[in-house]
Image 1: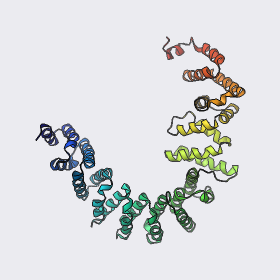
Image 2: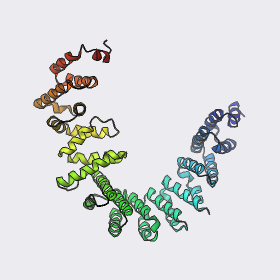
Image 3: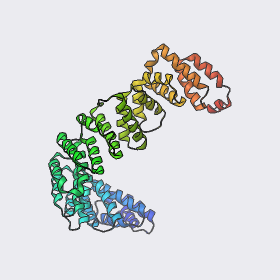
Image 4: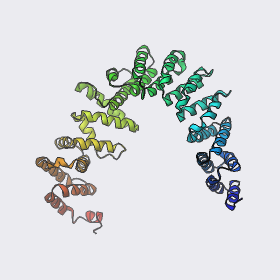
Length: 427
């Protein structure tokens, strides 16, 4: 027995949590030894969170490196999941999810357990792992006596997404009233990559027209956004002014999602678009959903002829958000038109400066137009008088490339300013 191994095994039994944690982290190299695996599994119950987290990481690493240990780890964790402690169960589920599909055979055994809560957890795991080979197994679970288990099976089918389940879900809608929203959501997820979009979408619209339940109808509209194509845009447009606010909002989101996916823009007059745009902008600033924000920007870039759209893009030009890359892309394509709009309308100085800066970096050929370039230089010189020192420096950097004479003129105005000198370490 090596000295390193003795040190690690001793450390795993230490009273000091830091020593236990360090020993857990070092135990990975000996992960093919049963006594190490057994001790790590025992330490999953450790009172110290740092130790427990280290154990989780080590167990996953060992499972990925040592095949024989992997089977043992999966088997033991599945036994531990039978405990009633919800927090501990969730901790174990996270470990199983990190191990992945190799755990599926043991998880399927749990899905047949006599305890309905265990069956539900097992089915949730299969759905989260996304094992396509388990779709038939999950469809069989729709015959489970417990409604919560059935609901989990429906959600798991949706998470995996497989056309084989479409007909079963359609038939289940009237059978399982307690899970109708989950069925709709799963159909929407399956429809994202399905070859049978029409079958799904026509069913969704039929149910929408029959239903009087706003929550269900809102879920249907959301599902249409995932499963539908441009042929369903008119239906969604008809819901943008629905009397129910939730349905209105979801119609806007779904319409944008469909148009972004199909790379299209719906046919509408400017009055409809402006009311739609106003509602969409409200959602844009309310949400943290980066996918929606990106889809929205893609969508409105096709309507750049409207001043409302130009104004929003310009207002976002100086925003340090994750979506700035998309904003910069739109500015690059439409730089000249956006700058002209800014010259003719009142915009914040920092927005105009950011717009020109972005345009110069990505679309500087637009400044080959002498008259246009002169107008931009004059505007920058005008703003130079009213902005703070940070913005003055940005303007000077732009003018140094756009107009050497204007650069020198404005540089002379601040070269003796103490703040300017301090800014550049000239004091």
